[in-house]
Length: 470
Image (cartoon, rainbow, N blue to C red):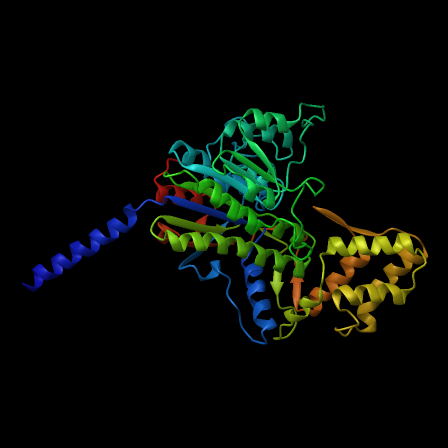
């Protein structure tokens, strides 16, 4: 009798496990923090705790997901990947060489991304980002091109994809080919392919038919290369959470077959290249808000939704702690703008008042970073900044600090480097690193994300959870 009961219990548990694995995810959120390493996540959590006077962390939405792991990021050609090879690995489940989008390392064999697999199954597909829609990571899901810099050609693949929803800041080369020849504007081509171009979140909300194919971009007159950094953003400017909300609304309308939505927080990478810690943690928090939007949808459809959070690579080699056992991240709240915006302020001062005094430059830094005003600065720490001031304002030399996405004023970069150091933070590089990246998951099929994996495993596991062929 006891053996019969144990056998029945075993069969019941096996059946329950099989049932759990048989539930296919109908709604997939694949959310990528470009450049977001584990320490980027940890910094945002430590900072939130320090603001509340706590020693510890205040967790993000996605760091509380029930399944977590980490993944390697090396490419086929390099130990340190770029966003093209990293994005391709996350999109198609195969490694390629740096610079290539959605193809093999010879750039002759096209690969099928998980987004195309979802479309083949009848699901609606959305590709969204906080940077340009033709940038490397989003492009990896719909394009097959030999170079990430082939922006015009990438959009030709976007048009052919027939995906349902695209969103981001805009397009980088709307009428210029890779070989710098004039070409027909992409916008009439998008419209001829059935896409409605919508400028800004307010205009999206006014659309009568949100179920049609849409391309959501920044409003005219805004930057096409990216949305503003969260730390610089004005109340009326579009943010990634708005894009995520718009995508869900559009992809859900008149749709019984489910959807696949990729969301990229693209500017975590940009400010990490600049080693700008305060701007970076605000970008992580901003990305977290877009995850919150997805999580609210999950709570309405918990048995049908899968959310997976990861990164294409880590940027900056961020280390939390640089001397002793104390952390001082709270002082980062004194930074009021990104390094890029601070560079603009200093340039404006140089133009309007070329003979500005050291005290005037110090006051500008004090107002926007808290240095000297709220944060004690030693004479030794101030000396390199003062020497750059002499070169810039007295000797009229224009000194800058060039990184992948910026060429910032050297006074700005030195001052923010000092603020980082006083906050107990260190950066190892202004490029990418080979550090493993975090993976977090919740929902239908999330149990597959519970052990160390290659980045190429992630789309394969999503495909398994959704019953897709990849």
